[in-house]
Amino acid sequence: MKRTKIAAIDVGTTKVCTVMADIDRNGMLRTVGVGVVPSAGLQKGLVVNVNEAKESIRKSVRAAEQVAGYKLESAYVGITGRHITSVNNRGVVAITRNDMLVRPQDLQRVLQVTRNVKVSSDQKLLHVIPRNYIVDGQQGVKNPVGMHGFRLDLEAHIISAAIASVKNLTKCIRGVGVDIEDLVLEPLASAEAVLTEEEREKGVVLADIGGGTTDIAVFKDNTIYHTAVLPVAGYQITRDISIGLGLSFELAEEMKKKYGNVNLVYKDKGESDRTLTTNGHSISYNDLSEIIRVRVEELISLIVLELPQNDYAKFALSGMVLTGGSANLPGIVELGSELTRLPVRVGIPVSLYGVSDSLLDPAYATSVGLLLWKRRNQGAKNWQTKGGIRRFFSQFFSIFGRKSIE
Image (cartoon, rainbow, N blue to C red; front, top):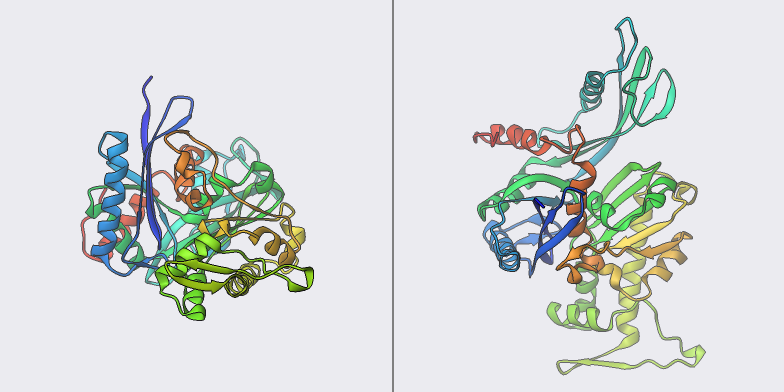
């Protein structure tokens, strides 16, 4: 049976993960290669040293290729960073034909009108995701083709990215000999791996807490409603531990992963504090937990402030799903539920067939989701999917005087 090759590269602040897979004619994914290495040259999701970042990506790709047994030619790539902006916009076109029948070309027309939003000169559109259509005032239409009407409206979620930041990332990827199939905003990818259809339909907040950024995506009625990127994540927790306890950053990270917990020891309940020792350094469990708890409380508060509605409890009936490496902190679910008054769970990526055992961890939600993004959107004909990234590259390469890749 012929299988289509597919790959994903998640270039994070703390790690680079490359996953190679194939898809059979029934859409079944099978992972054939995984390469995870520590990242360098990145800060809060942005490339700050091209050579270091390129070398990290090269090592990750080569590791995956060694397991898969063939060369990686192209991949879906995740993108994040504070430079990402988003907005919901609405466009409208008239149906002037005598039969008043909505045709596929009308969908293209209304999409073009909807994407005409003002963005700063240093940014270009990355995704234009149709949320729902409205035909003569009838709300919630998912596919208006074949319907009759005078007026066709489209509500879409529009995401833009800084040209320079995208150019730096793509330079690193292409510098190791890998073409880019598409750039995908990381929380959109993570959502594919950890959210259920019921959660997306009823309303849910996804928070992907990585090393350098916390990526937020809000879904309602099975479509994206809001996205945001916070420049605060696991790195800040480790830095606070390092400063507060007088440890090196590397040792603070080790302590966090080995002993980290947001729950304190309560002496009035008969519990006793204990001393934690690693590499000859001793610290108090309570001191470590208190630093982590304060930072996580602040982070969850920032996530709530980014939500589009004050009455978010009624909007997100399915609650909040935490994923990303920092979602592994013990006690984070209970603390999140306590602070938000929402149901909270940790999102673990769906299990894939093949050599994917190491990917069953919240830290790899984006990596797995990038593969699933392809499957969900392979038939779409809007900006964020087929051909979208090539149009994106054509625009910003022309600005910098480089030849289009088309």
